[in-house]
Structures are given as C-alpha cells and as structure tokens.
Length: 378
Image 1 (cartoon, rainbow, N blue to C red):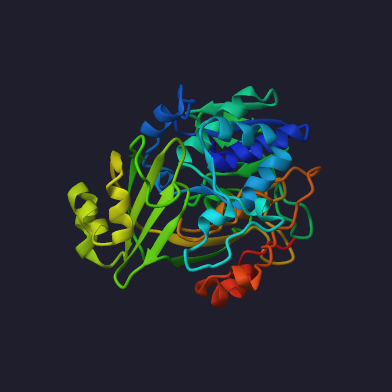
Image 2 (cartoon, rainbow, N blue to C red; image 1 turned 60 degrees about the horizontal axis):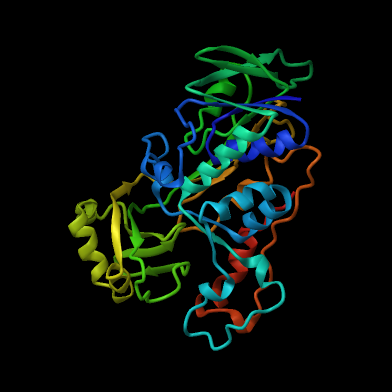
C-alpha cells in the first residue's frame, strides 16, 4: 500500500517504520522543520517548539515499549543505547522500604529506559532517514482529506488521500499522527463523514521542568536512573534520570494555584525543590543546562473512530487514541499497537502480575485498578 502519515514526531515515525518494514511505501508529512540534528546534544538544544511543548517535559521509554522495540525494531533499540539512553533495572525503581530487592526471573522484561524525549526523536529520525521505504517531507501541512463519495446504505465516504498546502496526495491509507491537538474532526466534517467520539477531562495541573547534568565524579544520592515522584499537599515534585548524565526535575502544582506562576523563574524553581531533602541532595551534584520550561492546559483525551456500528471513513486511522500527562504511566506502549501493519501481530499489553512481596504500600492498594486501566484489549 501507499501510506501517508500526517505528523512526523515519535508516533508518526514509529508508525512509518513499522509499516515500511511490513512492505508498504510510506510518506511522512511534518509541518515543522524536523531535520535530524548532528548529535544528541544539538537535538536537545533545539527540541522546544510551540506546537509540541511536551517534547521538553519528562519522558521515559516504558518497559512494554522497550520490549516491543527489541522484538520489532531492534535497530532503533540499539540506536537508543548507542545514543546514551540508560536502562533502569527493576531494582533501581524499588523504594528503600522493600526488604527484598533481589532479581526474579522475568524482571528484565520490566526494564524501562531513561532518556530525554529529544533523544528518542533523534534516533527515530535517523532510522527513518535510513529506511528505503520511508520518505519524510518537512514543511508540509496537511489541511484535509481526499475522499470518494459514500456508498449506498449510509456507508461513510472512503478516504483516498490528503490535501496539503503543497497540493493533493493520493494514498491507500492515511494515518493521523498529528498529536493531542489533532484536527481530525474538522477533516472528517469537510468530507461529510461522522466525527470521532471524543471524551476529554482536564488534568488540573501545570508543569515546570528543568534539565540538569550530573557533575563528573559526583557522589550521587541514588542511582541516576531511579525515578522519584513525591506528591505533597500543595504540589507534586519529580526527578527523572535521562541519557548521557542528564536529569530532569519537575514542580507540578494545581493549575489553579497561581502562586506557583513564579516557578518559571530559575531561582524560585530551585528554592521550591530545596525545601524537599531528596531533591536538595540531587541539586547539590548537578548543574542546570536549560531554563525552566512551563506547560499548562493539560488534559486527557480518548478518541474513537468507531463509535457505533458504522466506523468513520475507512482508510483513515488515528496513531494514538489516548493522550495523558507525563506523570501518568501510559507511555508509548499504549499508543504502539494501533498503527501496527496488517501483517504485524498485535501483542497484548497486559500488565504483569506483581508478586505481593514486591509491592509498595501504594501499589498494594492501586495495582488492580492500574492493571485494569492499562490493559489493551483488541
């Protein structure tokens, strides 16, 4: 098939690589200029863009996504490791309160990868550039869909390509990977098709994050890859390890709490985190390498192209049906199965059962709900 993917960020490039390796010709259209940087640090320095402010917020490659990389895109997995992405064995994520931190058989499948999002995108861009069946065009904005008229019996119109600001392009399959602000409903309305069924809920929090780098030879208070998230009475704070010695610290208050607006100032941001001993210890061994990145107006969105017995137009698919804020552990593994090529079997994403002796007090009370909510069913 000839496939057009609208959006050239991580979701679009993942979809493009998988479709290309299933034998399809893929054209990725990206409205921004996302040419690969010469190296990881150059990519990080140029990562922020107004159309995708989440790029500079904390990210990790969840364990399920890592396993899918190993199985289906081993070159991308190897590229991440070569780019300095750090693997975080399960024992590094266990709290000190656990008496048993010995490895169990199968723990290796529960290993996340700690990285900046810009490094993931950089590796994916290089992989896409090297893939013969993938072409990436930057500076091209998709403005709508091409469609054949609907068939008798109320069947929806059939998508046959996309409209862009550079002209029309025919396709056998169109993938919408434009992200959480997707204009898919406008596109569907233009061709007389049913819009998606959409549920949205405001997250009610704001993010202030800053990137640091650990000083060479510093005596670290914990393993670099250990993720620390603390929910306090008036705000949440977090520490995420990254690639090449990078670390991100976050202050996340309620969006309605305007007292924290000044946290975008570096001295205020630092002062807030120094009130928490766990983060003060990290600040003592790191140097900042960016300013503070604020991000607000966060919401969870669930979209479905099939809301009744009749789907929205065939030959058009969303690359991700759900978006969520970084503190929620959905990750790329939730998104990945949806754009899978027809010849690629979609694996289940059931959360492994957590042995009782490995549970912290929080997971003991929440594991059942979390497992149910993170299970993808076909």
